Length: 237
Figure 1 (cartoon, rainbow, N blue to C red):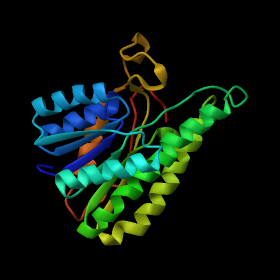
Figure 2: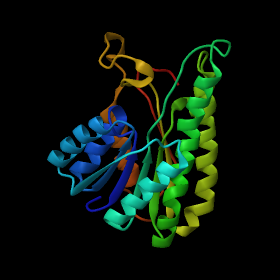
Figure 3: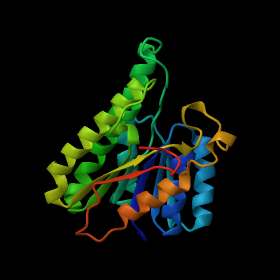
């Protein structure tokens, strides 16, 4: 992955931060994307210390078309190409359908689905012109199954799966790869939970997901990993 240009959304903490550090250790060039500039700068510092060749931070709300377009333009202006996009940004509200507000529903679809679409579409042209590229989506194991109290979140991840599987068929013959990584229970701050809480002791760590992403991204040119489902031993799937 040395010198590869890797764009990571939701890079300011959690899984996104771990993915950034994993690619940094491989001496990639990173573009860190999130809404919090202070957290992005903190991760930028850690990535440079870890060995990244160069790190660009771009404060972006990925649900806004114009902001995504600027992010892609800034990236191409700096590096001239985009080799990998990791669609990691996501939000989730876990409650019954009856209790879920329209705003919560729309927010999940705006970030998890529309944002992923906008970023994927944004990098496609440079990737197709290069004849190479890799789009990796951090989905969820509930993109393949359902849980009570998570209908909205499950719906977004089922949408990601359908979008990605269809996109793969569009671009695979043109040299662009599409991979979905579907984590199970992972110890992060996701959904305003406490990272490091006692009940999460046996859950996956963010670094576990980062290793899976790096594995898929570092396969030889002729090898495509469609999906990786990863969950802790304590979780029945």
